[in-house]
Length: 91
Image 1 (cartoon, rainbow, N blue to C red):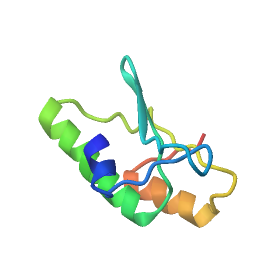
Image 2: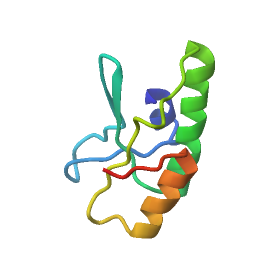
Image 3: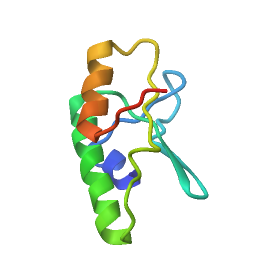
C-alpha cells in the first residue's frame, strides 16, 4: 500500500488540505483501507489485494468486508467500488 501510494497508483484520504494522505491502518488481524472512491484506486487496490493473497497464502474474507463512504460519495461511485471489489455490504 505504501509503495503504491508513493508511486501515485493509489490516492489516500486527508483530513485537511495540508495534511499527509492516509491509505491504510492495520490492527491485529483487521485492516482499514482509506481511499478515494474512483476507478483507478479500485483497480489498483484489487491488484494489491491479489498480490497480498498470493504472497501470504491468506484470502480476503469478502463476507466480513464492508465499504464505508463519505457522505459526498455518489451512489453510483459506491456501487461501482463495491462491485469491483466483490463486496455486497455497505456500512
